[in-house]
Image (tube, rainbow, N blue to C red):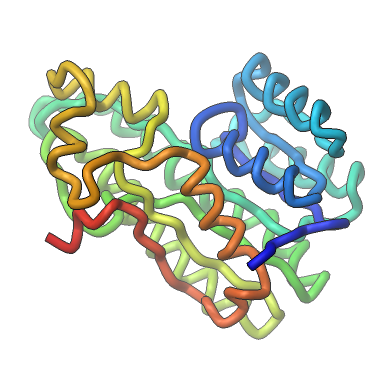
Amino acid sequence: MSIEFPGKTVLVTGGGSGIGKAICMAFAAAGARVACVDRNAGEGTTTVDAIHALGREALFIAADVTDAGQVQAYVRETRAAFGSIDVFANNAGIEGAVLPLTEYPEDTFDAVMAVNVRGVFLGLKYVLPVMKEQRSGVVINTGSTGSHVGSTGVCAYVASKHAILGLTRCAALEVASFGVRVNAICPGGTRTRMQQSLTENRGKVDELAMNLATPNGRIAEPGEIAATVLYMASDHARHMVGQSLILDGGRLAM
């Protein structure tokens, strides 16, 4: 099954690293024009340079997804450069601290909720009108297995990822009649900087413990998550609306 996006514009937040970078690269390889949004200019530029090396069109936009003005700006810049927004990977997120809830710093909690919830909300708020006007478009919000279950030490992260499913379902119901689909991808452990940070902060030397706790014996590669996002954005998934797709190697099945 070949999935291609020639002539389509894909907007990705948090596109400078990890899953976001993998999503940018996968869509570019499939023929799409990519607008990569990240607050880290060095990482975002590196992603865009890699896309240009493939001979594809790409644009880097520096933005803080928690700032409404900057979100509106990344939407305007994407449309000005490419004319449309056909796919929106609403992906930017942070992990926060690893501490018991009663010891969790209030400012860190607020920061996680700002990026992971407000950032996703603002992306939906300002991208969906574009898609409604087009009467077409696909949004994939990045949740987590933490959208479905609790975990010790990461109350802010888990709370924020639960909230993403609520936003996904509400948005999906509001725009489905306009030909716009909103869904969420929910990865488990994935080989990224964020995963490494969480692993180290939990006191584990490496990812061995997580591998042993995963039925298929390993964590995911970012490219595997990106490949599923491509499927969700394609016409093969055109009847998928308001859903969350879990990619965790079977952990939540236990």
